[in-house]
Image (cartoon, each protein chain N blue to C red):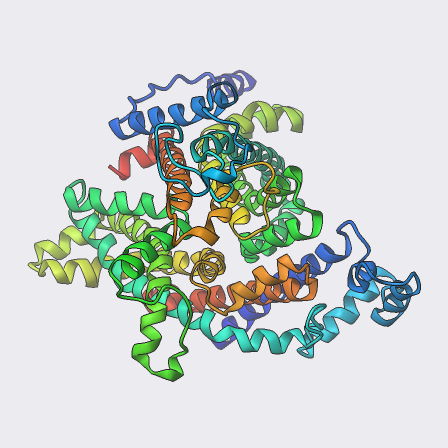
Length: 313
Length: 291
């Protein structure tokens, strides 16, 4: 078991290295001289040369990569071109709102989507099924920011239930946190629920057609027991997988949602960095979210054996 | 022996006729909506009621009227005309992205599925690409390469490629084990012939489905990029940047986001529904189990 876990964890290293290489090349191979970009429009001709010397840009490309990777492993993500503060610190300051909204979204989505998917599969081709499928395809089709603005219009401006913008951290009390975080989380929930409910439904439909379900019913097991104990447990692995791969979708959604609700999180940081062409920040955010994605999928992979004892490590 | 093998090869797809099932009601409605949107945007330059770039300082943020059916934006430009013209670039970027990512993904997927050595390399690269959240990757690419139409297409295309590669590779991996492919190999067919004559046709159906979904997600991605300020320059209207400009005035005139948002959502919705319909029609395995 632990041997497999170790091997599986080590297997993520090549992917992470490739991601790092990719992000490194993204900045170095793009048109435009990084030194000139960093020096800015007002630079004297000598300044880019100085920066090149300072940043080691005169070194061969592979050497630059290893130096950069070394800094990265020591937790040095570079310095912002605009605020001249370490990027790692900037991200640490902003990660709270993003993580809390992402977690709240995951929590709501999983509790809502899995019963929705089960219900749709159980009442296959009945009204509930059609409603779930309609919601699901809508969730994929309506852009997050359109949903967000419709929610703001209805729940904040018309009904006055929530503040229009802003964010209160959870440390200031659960109620005030929920007041600001619930609407953004619900906005994001629409895509995530669509994804998970659809996957749950499809896999439950597959499983419900199996012989052992008929056996379970024939034994006189209650419908609840058949659905949750026999069917859901066997449909769990693909559902877990999609929760993991959907994380990338969630990150993209968070960036947009934070812009709509003006929340000072990683998303706002990224968008501000784009507008200011603050490359080290963009680079760091991409690296961090990709590593998080790989990590989450690793954890999910390792949790398969909890649901399916046939998967043994 | 060779005779038997030859018949096996000849009996294989393509050429196998398959009864194409009828399109469902939902798909027909979706197709109609999409056709209306596409036709209106294509002929837009000849039928728009106003010049979409014509500013009118006296008619800023006006509500719907006979002259301006959907009202005007913060520069007094006609919203309906802007949405109609804006759809051209949005749809063009979507179609271009779908074509390029399917094309590149097909080549990489064929190579990965057929040549074991290339497989490991290509798939690790695709894994890495999949790990990077697509919107962030696209934002970074546009930020670095400038906000031209070309770089927006490239930025949306790159994250979509792994999806195509995985689909094509999976199809090739299972098809190459089929008796007709083994027969073709043992008959001494050259690799390109096996790849293009025998394996390629298998990928057509899944690619149509995948391509439709990519079209939907590309139209969405363009809007998101523009909305975040990393899209095509605001001089040319797209659905995304019309909404981005409307952000500042959302409290006064939410229609600036709601109307383009509605058209955009309807368009993506109908493309997604057509994708579902195509999948149901083209994939006999799913047709049996999912119904």
